[in-house]
Structure formats: structure tokens, C-alpha cells
Picture 1: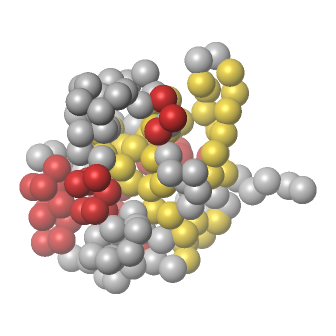
Picture 2 (picture 1 turned 120 degrees about the vertical axis):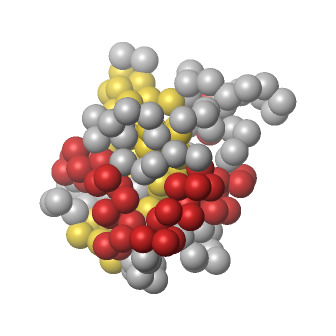
Amino acid sequence: MNATMSESGESLTERDITALERHVGAGLPLPYRQFLLEYNGGRVSPDCFDFNRNGEEDGSMVDWFLRIGDEGWSNMYKYLEVYKDRVPDGFMPIAHDPGGNLILISLQGDGRIYYWDHDEEVEEGQAPGTRNVYLVANSFPEFLDSLYDIVV
């Protein structure tokens, strides 16, 4: 991992991770599971990433990786509750950017990482789809390795 973590959360146990997996109804991809056990969220540096939005290059940055057990705005369970009817099934928020958009991990298959744009989400009461979800990386380790700093 090229990234450095800071302001990580309290240490987790296997029991904490298993409780989260029961809550979301799926097993977590192993690399992300290990990340939670080692860091339990926090800030990352470098923090910028790129993705393709409908054929155009775009980018964002990780503000916070969500934590288990934190009472602040990086609380994993709070995000799961707030976004349960807004994020498509099979995805779970793992981080947010400074603008209120999410970084999601797919709970199906190999744990691909996606950017979720809140400006393009469906209207309240409609089932969430993937029109506002953009592939960032094919795996969590690939995502961490792709992070970079903006050079000014």
C-alpha cells in the first residue's frame, strides 16, 4: 500500500467485523476486512483518485474512510442507515469525499471500488440504480495503490 493512514479508529476484533457482515448481509472482501482490522478507517494520504464518468475523466478525493464504533460523521453504521435506500443493493459505503459523495465497495464478487455521486441519485421513493455509480478500481488494494497527491 502506497498510502499512509492517520487518525484511525479504535482497534477492532474479528467479532466487530463479523457483526458488520451480519448487519450488511454479506461477507466483506478480504483486503477490506484486513484494512478495517488494521486501521478501522481514518484519513489517508495521498487521497486523490480518478475515474471515468460516461467517457470523461473525472476525479475526487477521500475525505474519511468510515469507522466502526466512531460516533462522529465517519461512523459506518450511521452511513449504512442514512444511505440504505439511496445506494444500490450489493454496495456498501466505505468512505466519503468532501462534497458528500461516497466511495462504495461491491459486496458481490471481487470487491470492486466505485464512486457514488449524490447529485445524480434517483428521487426519493425510487429504487436506487447504478446510473450514478462509477467504477474506480477493480479491488480495494488497487484503489489504495492508485491514490495520488495533487501537485500545485
